[in-house]
Structure formats: C-alpha cells, structure tokens
Length: 311
Image 1 (cartoon, rainbow, N blue to C red):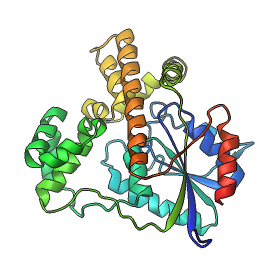
Image 2 (image 1 turned 90 degrees about the vertical axis):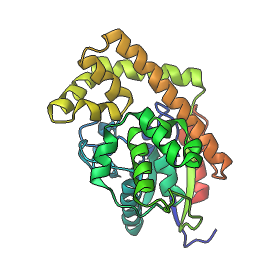
Image 3 (image 1 turned 180 degrees about the horizontal axis):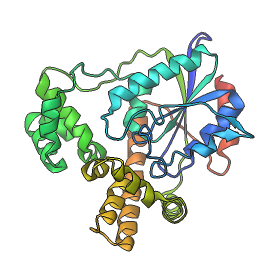
Image 4 (image 1 turned 45 degrees about the vertical axis):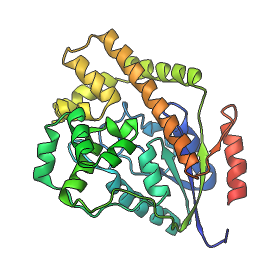
C-alpha cells in the first residue's frame, strides 16, 4: 500500500445492527463525512420508515456532513447507476477537502457498485418501454427476464428477483440493446477501502428489529409518514414498490390488513430482509472482499483501532 492512495471507510451490516450510530461516532473522531448506502434513504420524505435518524447527525450541536440522503423525490426514478455516479462525486468532494469518507448502509448492491467500482451498461432509460413494464407484476417481470436471458435470471439473488424496479431496469437494458452487459466489476480502483461490519446473531437481531418497529409505529408516527406521502402524490403502487414499511403500512391504510396483521407481516418481512442482507455480505466475502466484523459488545473501540492502523 502506498501513502498516496486515497482511503475510505465503509460501515456495513444488516438492518437494525447500529450502522448509522457507529458511522456518526467515527465521523466525529476522524473528521469524516458520511455517504449513505441505502436504496430508500435517497428519497425525500421517507424518513422514519428508512431509519434516517437525521437528528443523530449532531454532536454537542455540531453536525456531521452527510451525502446521498434526501437527494430525489419519491415519485422519481433512481437506480444503482444514479447512486454510483452521485456517490463518486461525493467521495471526490470529501477527499478534496482532506476529510475521511465513511460510507454507511446495508444496500449490498449500492455498496458493491461503489466499492467494487462496477461498470454499468450505457443503455439509456426508455420511457415508453418502462411504462409498459411498470404494468407487469414482479412475477411477470421475472418470467419475462427468464425468457429473454435465462442465464442472468438464474443468477439473481432473492432481493433482485422480488425488486420491481431492478427487474424493469434489467429488462430495459436487454430490450434496448441485447449485446449490452449488465453491471460487472472493474478490478481497477483508485481508493483503498477498509470495510467494517456490524452484525448480531439472528435471535438478537430479530429482537432489535421488533423493538425498533414498535417504537416507530407507536412513538415516531411512521403510519402518518406513509399517509402523508400518499397525500402528497405518491400513489399506492409506488409505495408498494418501496417494500417493507411502505408496502405493509399502505395496505393497512387501504384496509387490506388490520393493525395486528400489518405488524406481524411487516415484522416477518423485515426479518427476511435482514437474512438476505446477511447472505449478500457472506457472498461478497466469498468473492474476495474483506469485511472486518466488529465485536458488538464494543464496536467503536475495535473500529477505532482498525482505522488507526489503516490510516
């Protein structure tokens, strides 16, 4: 490792593991700025359901700068290629100021796109095609993708297979220009990354997920947030596409579920999401990416020791 290579930190892990809290503490100590890596925190007005916790970005009144949070309206399209482009801009800006970039989040695809320096297809968005594809269900989209590109379809993980927006983008790339490739890793990177992971055994994580869910429902007005988004013009189909809190609360608001059913189904869905996140990070490690998993009993002290050695 040479001293002139730019360095950056990433704090990764499943939902409810405490990534944001750790990243903010590290940013305070190391003059860092946070770059979000969450596919839903990019949307304005989606605060409680995505766990932005913006009030926590302060220490004795001093704010921690953050990027890639609240950058687009929830009615607008935003994909991983948009994320990568804006995150690279943020990285360059932070490094130019002599500050430490700290990427924090649990969206595996967004993290890999930035850290592994993915190269994306140059296919442009096709509005007419996208409107036609929007009418199809997730199952119909996946079947269409399987018919057109069975090799690709078979490689998708469960998250991608059930993600309406990503399936549309894959189909858009294939149908616009069949010879285009989908995102692939570019081995050349000009940044040296230290990736810190924070996680819990599943039984502990499930309790943290449940406690956080009840807190957001009963004390943080998460239901009111979803209602307000709809009143501001985000239609039910769009809310459904965001998944998890926005999907199940919107069903509750439409009286498709009663309150207890909503809580139960949402809790199950978040647990399943956390398991998929864990699987993603394990696969990333198998692909050769080193993740330093921290001791959850004292993650800050261990993280600081690793960063001191890294810097």
